[in-house]
Image (cartoon, rainbow, N blue to C red; front, top):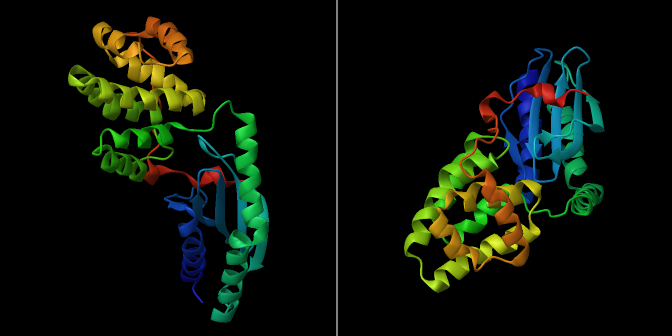
Length: 261
């Protein structure tokens, strides 16, 4: 059996199992011609299916996801021999074993443990993408823009997206917003600042609130929570100053070198 076809068959089976659980297959380009790679990521966990041509090994691995991508502390879950002499029955056996590796009780427990650890380690666990999605309640058109960002870049460029897509909408919105509308908008700020991670809090204060002029800022300020009022005042000194930009990572140039042991 041709190795490439066998690999895609197995990776497809793994993808079909993971997709309903919120995993996405990422586009990766292998630096090493001796490897074929498929990467699947969720918010907390990453899985990779890797074929090592020299060893003729098909491997299933997992690691924790960070905001920058897989943390590269890969743990091997299963290893099988696969070569040109392998049969369809062999491929089915590998597929079934890999599916069990990503869907069994151990896999579920693994995901829960990683999620719990993240919550314990972070002041908040709501990330910039979660923040962006909350604004869809006020700006429905953001739904398509978020999808476009997710499809085009990995990881999600939280600060860039907020500056280019959310901030201009908020500026226009505040100009004519009624009191109930302002309360709804600022309610998102307050809740997400309280629940958000460090990056989310910085985006709310330095990117979004600082996008408002002084009059708009003062209008919004009275509705902010006490904690956010303090942070917003401190962040105001950065208004108009350059902040080190993010370096976007397009999905179609993601490198499989991130999968190396």
